[in-house]
Length: 339
Image 1 (cartoon, one colour):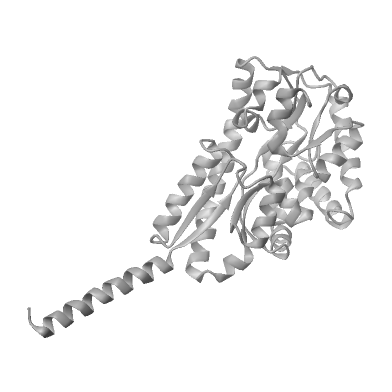
Image 2 (cartoon, rainbow, N blue to C red; image 1 turned 30 degrees about the vertical axis):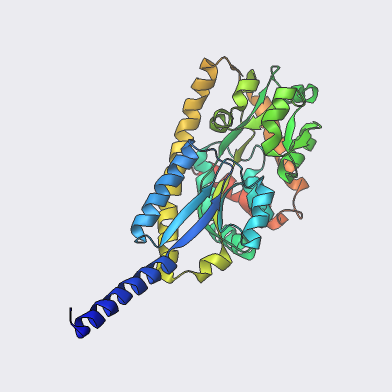
């Protein structure tokens, strides 16, 4: 090989190496934490999202998942997000409230009657929620509700007053749950969500609240016998990304994250709602008894309890103005369904 050819080959090789190095540098791994266990519907959709993200970004963006609570409870995850140890996370209302307290209004007890109300009210205040998340140093990539929450116990509950005789769990540090139990007159046992299964096994608690699907995914249903037939609240969920990290990405990458996030989280919400309904049948088949709904007058009384609980937190988590606007919006939607 001539000297000039050798130089040319070396130069070409160097360019290939430089291109490869540039490509390696361009790849961004997004560390993503969630309580959802591997193999759950939640994580299956997250894996699909990741494949879509890698494909659309040409391999420049990729999630690295830390699932099943390996990064700790949601308050631990919020701290790691703020420190830059992770860049994104899937949260329930507890974690969302650590970042943007006003969004906890969506988790208030006895507020919503069905998923349609959740979607329409949340959309009506979209600007407020996005502003709240950004003020908390994050960007909302999409909502992914946990679903409507029910009480699961080892003794039958036919009236909320029956909860007073149950060792009821409360997610430690959750002001919404605290206000709900205070209004009902129950003194719960506060624990981290990661301690619930062990506490059910040891008898420290004998009652929990969860969506039917989550009760199965977390295996809590194996330690309870009854499900109360009236929903306590809708449990919000969402995926957030650090605003500092998000703003550091090229505009094209930000667009891909938002677009793929909206797509897959909307899919997840639909699947979760469908599987939540199916999960009730699974729970019944496993031997859990669903206690019948109360008479209509008691259900109306529960909604009044919800109004009282929401007012306990006005001025603490959210403004009274936001509370009143949201309640009026909900009343208007109920008066004009479908409009």
